[in-house]
Structures are given as structure tokens and as C-alpha cells.
Length: 254
Length: 386
Image 1 (cartoon, helix red, strand yellow):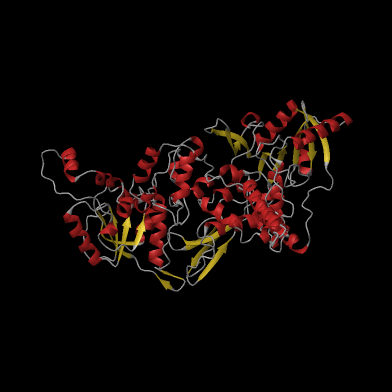
Image 2 (cartoon, chains in turn orange, cyan):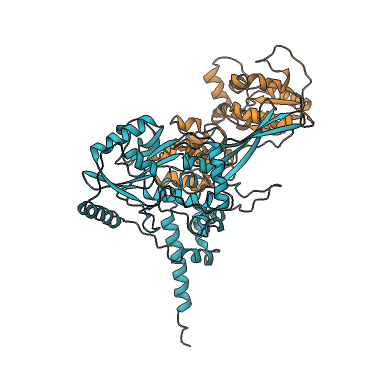
């Protein structure tokens, strides 16, 4: 691919899933209008959802899911050694995701509930960066394909990879939505990273923070707003811990 | 009413070379129309043109209706008794996202395509403060050294119908002297009971109205108009003292008031998004997915957002919430050189209503004034006896 005197190379690409629903990887095959152009940017070496061919030499790797077993740790370390750029792909990879609810219970309790009378080896949930170095994070439950396209184009062209630093409110206001706080709900929009085009709040569903905290959030002011409106603190706790994306801010909880 | 790209460019050239009057006809023409005939007029207008007017979208927790300017296709779609829309009409002229140009690459060369074309629309029910906001945007975006053809195209192709209204308890447009408006609209309707008193400010509006039954106002109608204006003017419950505000802002540059309100600020940008005059933006250039071209996009941004003042290399000139909030108030209430240091706040209090942290111009400005007054009190204290 040559343009304006520059030569762009396809990414030697692989994608692997760990503990997750594979929904984020499925997004890579979504958005048909640009799918052919998108795949043109990738030399797919290993990606079981799109190709049965499997090669073990790749540079850029997407990791979907969290880590919840010993063998996953070993497999991830091996992938990290091979990859030049490792991308935590989706909310589970970036923060632990919904699976993190497991960490609220003891391992024995969890196994007894899900696999009664069976011997199951399992670990408390870890996000990818707890195990290996992550170069780039693409959050979202699921990821936004549009954002993935933008980032893949940046990787191919050697441009800076960025995520929006502002919260969901910016895009929510552009959709002319009624603020969900004004409808009596707790919404994590004011503290959650934008870039999703406020898809949930546009559907009148409060933001659960799947994209994690926006840059330099004002958690005390956010908690004050929930308190001042006398909203349900149990609801707040449930929302803020839903994806385990606000781990570092948990001390602020009322 | 349609103005094409070619027409817009010609108009921009004219703007470069001369000072525009901002008006389509020299004098205002006044008429009176019955409410039944007005309904017929609006129905005809919206049936034949893409039109937008206030519609109720929700009821909030207090039971108050929430309105937005949305597409309408008949008189009955329009909530003529609405109070104020949650978001302003700004985005019809300055879209939240707008493509500025498109690039096509071929070999070692490239072409740039720019399109100012826009569909003509009718915008119904704007309040005087909303129209004042457009006049302020005209000052910044049309009457400066570099008129914006993008804005001009939308402004010239929008037929604006204004409606007067009784203020909400928190409206402070009277303090900003924007509770009435003399220019910037095609047609303005004052509610004088069974009829509307029409101020016709464009030949377009005059020609449209020729097809409908209107009459010249009598003395009695003029009296009713004066009464109506008096009633509106006397109905304001909120007042913000803006006397000498620009100089107070200069003096209070280092005031602790900014940190106090800054600590509350969520830096979510909501205030700027709903504001009728906040026009700050960011520009992004991105490759097309096929790498054969690129686009340059403009998007409305807010000076309260954390990376508003980040420059290449990563330095942030305004890393603190309070600093960012301060500069928003500076722009709003002290003005910038590009609009002759005029205040650009029109007093609609949309930002105050939308702010989840309870930050609003009235309280912030009063706080600054108290700061100022207490400092004067301290200075004038007599020295104690020894």
C-alpha cells in the first residue's frame, strides 16, 4: 500500500480470547460496510473467528478476556513473548470486566455454586495488565468497531493511538438526550471515558462505565452529586463495581 | 431561500470586502395575525420545508417537561407553550460534528473537496435570548476578519421564527439585556392574547405572509404589545448584577472562588454543549479506512474538558478544574478580542440547569462580587486604637 510516497504494511495480526464471551472479537467481523477495507489492513496470522489458518509469527496481538486459570497465565506469557505490540481488547481484558464479580466470593463458594461436586481449578480474576505488559488498551463492552478501525489505521500508518479523554456526557449531550440523573437514575456517564457515542444512555440505559474512568475524574464531586440527590447508594456500588473499572477509586465509596 | 456553495462564497467575499448590515431588509414591518390564521401559516410553512420546533421529549423527576428542538411536520407537533429547550438551537448552525473537508489521494498528489451546501430549514419558536445568541455568533463568525462559510451557509439558509415568552424562575437574560431582540430573525411573534403581533424582519417572511390574512396594527394592538413586554419584563425573578463584571473578573483572576467552584466541576463539558454561544471546537484529521483519502472534522469542544489546553508534546496549560472553569467564565462574561470584548452569555441559564454539580452563572458571579465587596470592606476598615 503506497500513498503520498509512504509505504504502509499490513499488520501481522493475531487475536486470542481468554475468559470472556468473545463478543469483542465478533465485533471485528461486524460493520460490513467497511469490513473488506478493514481486513485489507490485516495479515491475519491467527484468529479463529475469521480464519482456520494458524501461524505463530505475529507482531500485533489483540487479547480479549480476563485471566482466571493458571494455564491462561502461561499461554498469555507465551503470546507476550511473541508479540511486539499487545493490545488489551475489551473491558474484560482492560479491567477484569463482569467476570470480576467472582472476586467478591471465595473460590470454594464460586466453584460450589457453578460446578457442584466437580474438581475445577480456578483463580481470582485478573486483568491482562496484572499478568503482562499492555501496550495499548481498547475498552468497551463490547468494543466500538469504529474506534477499533481508527486505532488499526493509526497502527498501520504509524500515527499516534489515542482514546478520548473526556467523559460520556460530551457525546450524550450531542445526542440531545435527557440527562438520566434528571430522570432519577444513577449514571456513570460523568466519570466514564467517552468514545462510545453514548450508545447506552441514548437508549435510556444508565452508563455502567464499561470504558473505565475518563482522564482525571472528580470522584468526590460525583459522589456528592449522588448523595445530594439522595440516590440509592447500593445502586451506586453495584454500578461502580459492575465492570471492576473503577478499582483505583473504590476508597471514595460512601 | 436557498443559498448554494457558489452563493455562499460570493457572500463571504462580500463580507471580506465590506461590513455587512446583517439584515435582509432595511426596516421592520409590523402586522397582526389571528391565532387561527397563524396556525394555517405555520402548517403551510412546515409542510413545505424541513422544519424544527420545540417538542416535549421527557418529564424530569420534578415533573417538569423537557423540550428539544426536533423535526416537526405540523402545527400540532410544536409545543408553543414550552418554557425553554434543554439544549440550545446552536447545533443547527454549529453542528456537534461537521466535516470541513475531504481529501482524495492519487499517486503523489491529492485533491481537497470542500462543500458548504446545506439544506434550507425553518426553525420555529426561538426565544429572544436564543436569537441574541445567534447575533453574537454572527459577530464572532461572520463579522470578524475570517468569516466562516460553513456557518454562513447554515445561517443564511435558516428561516428563524422567534416567539416571546414569560421567563422561567431562573432565566436571567434581562440582566444581560437579552430579554428582547430587534434583529437576527426573519419573523418574531409576540403573544397579545387572541392574536400575534408580528415583527417582520425579512423580505422572505414578508412574501410568505402575503398569502395569509394579516392586518396593520392599530393603536390598541400597540398598547397590548407594550403591556405584554411590560409583563415579561416584570416577571423576572432572577437577577445577576453584571455591572463592571469584566473588570471584576480581571481583578479576581487569583480569587479562591475559582478553586471552590472548580472543586465541584466534573469537567464533563455539558455546560458548553447546551450553551447557545459556546463555539470552541477541536479539529481532527483522519485517514479513510481504505487509506485512499482523509477527512478533516470539526467538533464542538469545551474549555472545561481536561485536554482542552493540551499542546503537542503533552503539556497541559490548564490542568486544574478551577482554571478551566475560570476561563469559561472569562470567555462568557469578559469576552475575547474577536467579539470586541463583549460578554457572550445571554442569560438563558441552560448551563446552570444542566450542570450536575450545581454550578451556575448566578451563584458564581455573586460569589465573585462578594469576594470583591468583602475585600473593599476590609480595605476601608479604620485602624484600631493603640
